[in-house]
Amino acid sequence: MIRKLILVAFASTAFALGACASDGGASNDAFAKQVADVKSSMKELKADNALWRDTGKFVEEAEKAHAAGDAEKANKMLKKAQFEVDAARKQFESQKGAGPTY
Image (cartoon, rainbow, N blue to C red):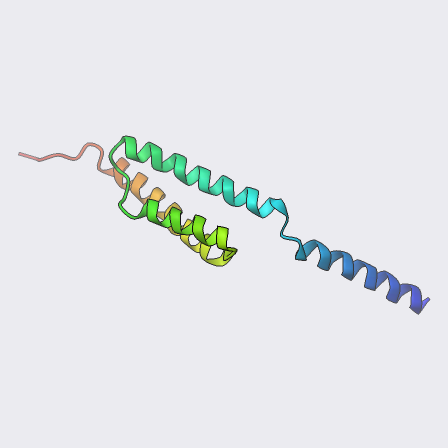
């Protein structure tokens, strides 16, 4: 009985570790989708002349880090880019009708 339990525990642990160890295409697909979303938003903001200066630099750094296998840095840079896109959109919307007051 104990041998069967140990065998089942070992098999399930090996299966779980194997699933965690494989980087799979899912993380690459998710990263590519996030980059595409940020670039799409950047394109819209650029059309409105509301894109912030460093947003594109952050996306480039994220792509370079991802290609080098540094997922932590890639995610950090992509989060910065996403924040700038969101903040630029908020700024554009809040100041859309700004003008001088007489």
